[in-house]
Length: 145
Ligand code: 5GP
Image (cartoon, rainbow, N blue to C red):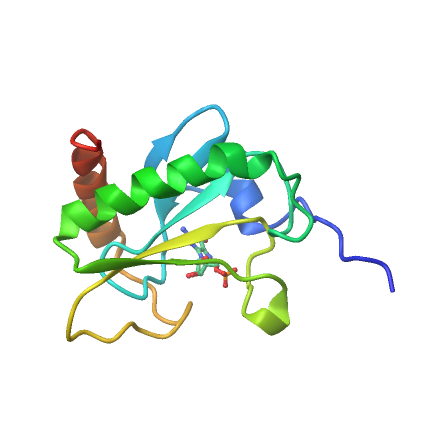
C-alpha cells in the first residue's frame, strides 16, 4: 500500500497561499499561527509549517526545528492572554486518528479548570470573536520570554 500524498488543495495550504483568509497571530519565515475557526476552548489556535507535509509521519525532521519554537511561543502567549490554567498541545496523524486537514499542524488549546473542552472541529466561532482573540494573543506575544 502506497503512503498517502500531500495534496496542495487543503485548507491550510490555501491559507498559506493567501487564497482564503485567517485570523493570523504570528508569522515568520518558516511558520504561521492563526485561530482555529471551530475552537475547543477560548483561544484555541493552530501552528503550521510553511513547508508542505500531510502530518508528522511524512514531515522532514528539520521541519520541527522551526515549528516547535513557534508552538512554544504561541502556547505561552495564549496561556497568558486568556489567563488559562494550562495548555494542551494536540496533533493528529491521518483520519482514523482524528486528522481532518492534511497539512501538518499543532493545536494550541488553552485549558481552564472546571471547563470541559468542546468537541473537535464541531462549532464555528463568530469572526469578530476570533479576530479579538487573535489580537489578545498578539498583544501577549509582546511579553513572551
Ligand atoms: P485536525 O482535525 O486536522 O487536527 O484539525 C483541523 C482543525 O482545523 C480543526 O480544529 C478545525 O476546526 C480547523 N479548521 C477547519 N477548517 C478551517 C478553516 O477554514 N480555517 C481555520 N482557521 N481553521 C479551520
